[in-house]
Image (tube, rainbow, N blue to C red):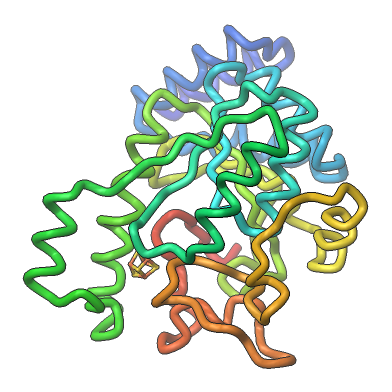
Length: 271
Ligand code: SF4
C-alpha cells in the first residue's frame, strides 16, 4: 500500500517537478521511511553526462537553503569550493574539526576563507564523549581495532556531521570513483541512507589529473601535504604518506584492510 502511494505521488508530479513539489515529495518520503531510489535514478539519468558546474548549479538553485557542502579540505573539495563560490558563495559550507587534524589543514581553512567569499562553518565533537572515550580506551585507541577506530570516527566525525546536516535535504561531496575500491560504484547522485537525504558527487568521474589541472589553472589554495605524498588527508594519526603506485587512499587507516576504510560519512553498496 505504501509503495503504491509513493509511486502514485511520484508519477503524478515527476513531469512537473518544481521545487515546492520536490519538497513535498521529500517530506512524504521521509514520513514514509523510504529510500527515494526512484527519484535518485531519475536524477542520475539526467545528470550522468553533465559538467560538475551544471550539477552544482542545479542543486544549489533547486534546493536553495536546503543544500550543504561538507568539505574535508582535500584537493577535490577545494575544486568544489571554487565552483560553489562562483555559483552561490552563500551556500552552507561546513567542515569537521576532530581535534586531531594536521596543522596544515587548519591553515587551509583560514586561507580558503580569505581567498573566496565563503564561510566554512566548523563543527566540533561532543567534549564529554571524547573525554570518556579517551579515558576509557586511550588517546590513540584507533590503532587497537576496527571497532575502536569506528568508535573514534563516530564520536569525532559522524555525530558532529549529524548536527551539520540538520535541516538539510541534499549535500555535495567530493568523492571520486577511482579514489579507492570502496568508491568504485559512486554515482553522480545517490541516496544517503544514513542521513536520509540526497548526496551529490559532482566530480565522481574525474581523474586525479583533472583535479590537479583545475587547481593549477585557477590557482586554488590546497593542502601542502599533497606535495609530500599525502593524496588523501584526514586526521594526523590516521594518515600517512603513500608510496609510488599505491592506491590514493592507501595512507588512510593504513593498518586496516582496504574494504573497511570508510569513516561512516560515506555509504556504498558495491552496485
Ligand atoms: Fe579518530 Fe582517526 Fe577517525 Fe580521526 S580518522 S576520527 S583520529 S579514528
